[in-house]
Length: 304
Image 1 (cartoon, rainbow, N blue to C red):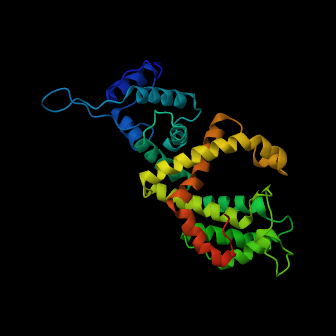
Image 2 (cartoon, rainbow, N blue to C red):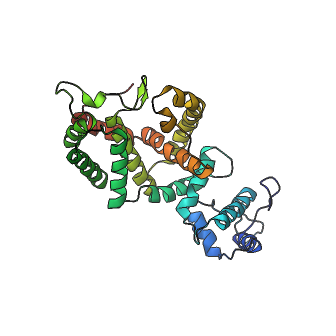
Image 3 (cartoon, rainbow, N blue to C red):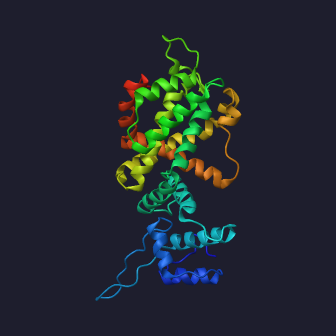
């Protein structure tokens, strides 16, 4: 297989032939589907004759990317590898600014991935609600309280119209079952450093923002300029987080679990891509919209 430096451009038929040489039978329509789902960039127009135009071609780096994806699919134990399982690798490369993945390709890959990351099923909503509850609930929180928060969180994600006042009251009982009435129980510290604590209410707002971002990515309603601005901000923040990660693991109670890097390259890629959603929400405005609606019900205060 050629490397990025010595590869040559190729048509869709050339890519099909490449796959055949690797022992994989593909049809030209498969290449079209990969483009649609963001696994490949759109082939480039070329004109070398006075009349008409030549067959569009994939740049050399896209041809190599195609070969690497075929190789990865061959290594998979699955008989058929869904597009959404490959999309995170494409997004990861774009976030790293590899020069291989185009902005348009990344937008389609984000749409493909968000279509699976935010699957709107009752089981998925329940699983996501329970993840939030498990991370922050007081050990002695009543089972009935847990069920009520779970119900409200699932309803909030389904309707996109959270009942913040009811959710705020239930969350207080979940976080601190025996808190004094005059105490801001939602402001109690949970995992994090003293100067950057993560409280339950803020975690729910972050979760809601990511759900909203997933919907907007599926609808391709986020402006390309916002995605590029979010990538610039995210790259800097992610680099700082990776730099500080060992210290966070050592300084924070439970930090070895909270800030540990996932095992395996694929899990690390997925973590990288999933973390990008909150930055998109902040840059594109979903976070402000959700936080504005939550302030009354949760008594949430701005975090400068």
